[in-house]
Length: 223
Image 1 (cartoon, rainbow, N blue to C red):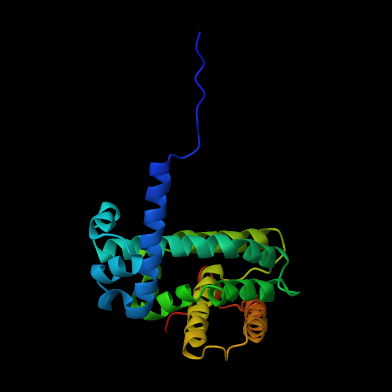
Image 2: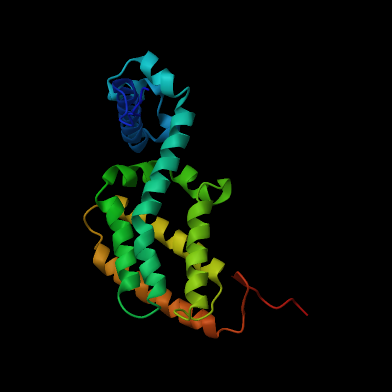
């Protein structure tokens, strides 16, 4: 009788494929951060990656394809790094420093990874389309689900969740733009504290507003 042991360790070929892919994505992040999708071309990415054209085309067929993959991976990375802080913020209620800490943790992702900041800045048109092309649906749905759960638990007052989530995303993108336009001049701690105060106040005011209906604020129909 013979026993065969499975070996879960990746082969050298698999390790090389993974390393090549990561090298190409890293090069693409740099190129798209410098030139944007519209100004970049595949030759630029190949040159920065220091791999051969044949190796590049083993993984991606166009700059649009690699841009799409890169954007998905950036969004997933940001989501994974920030969600724990936001969960803590919503579960702690509208008081305390948890919301400030969540904003601070989020902005520090970009502060500690300038390539993300440049990528978002040089591709603002495509980044702003994220709400319409479905790429951040998972983040938005998790955000709204987490807030609604906090409301059910009594940690937050009832307020129009979708309205606040839209306002949250819009505000954050504008702050990120300022961080790039004015490098080193934006205090992440001050911005986070101001945003936390602003959203805590907005949540409380909307929870008391008779105009807060469902997902958005609805005006009464004209008479």
